[in-house]
Image (cartoon, rainbow, N blue to C red):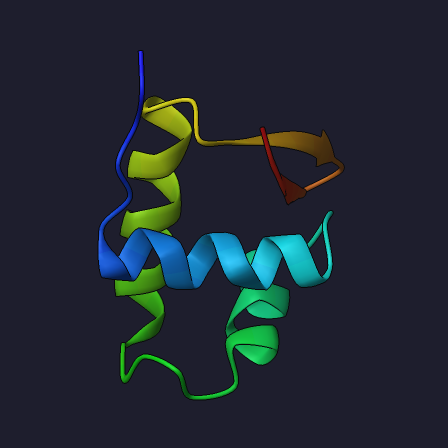
Length: 69
């Protein structure tokens, strides 16, 4: 089944394609102002994208490192 990304999802995926295995803060830094979001908005998008199986993560201590699937 073909998945279509929204503009916002595409922006997050682009950041993860540039540099996989990033924390939320890393994604924000990599996106470098592409989207004018608050921290919680990034967290919400990343969580939803995990639920859609677009990205995955590995838990290391307290941190989650996200990567594209």
